[in-house]
Length: 154
Image 1 (tube, rainbow, N blue to C red):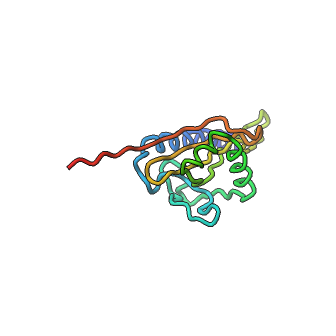
Image 2: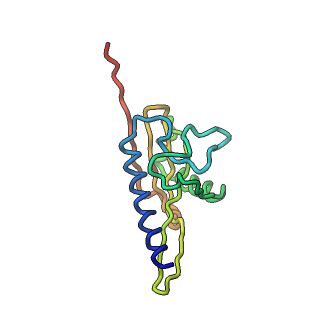
Image 3: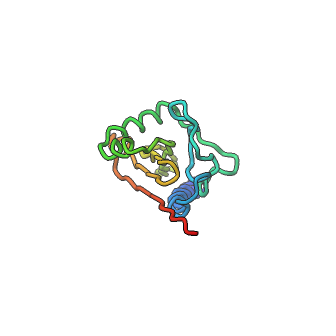
């Protein structure tokens, strides 16, 4: 059982890294770009598929995230002045992805907790932003903005 928990923890870390690398390497992709746990936000369908690259949940497994958790994370993000500027400049909330940390105690007890989350923002087809939220401290700790410029030449 301990071996299984350790393997799960390692695979979770790999999945998070693959997700981050996939997001950075696929900035020009508009579909299947971000993993969305909600599908909808404020009545608007999120334009990203549930089978994003490197998510680690493509084998039929799923994680259910409560609306209360998503609302809490979004409210924390919206209280940040930099996020407010992004929203004022045409970015929209595309989804919330909890980062689940797994801890194995000395006695083999395994605990999982989502103390951090990523709020994904999109701006048409040209911009994406990833807002890292520390849920326990109720603050934004990092914002990564990806933009794409396309110059058409005849």
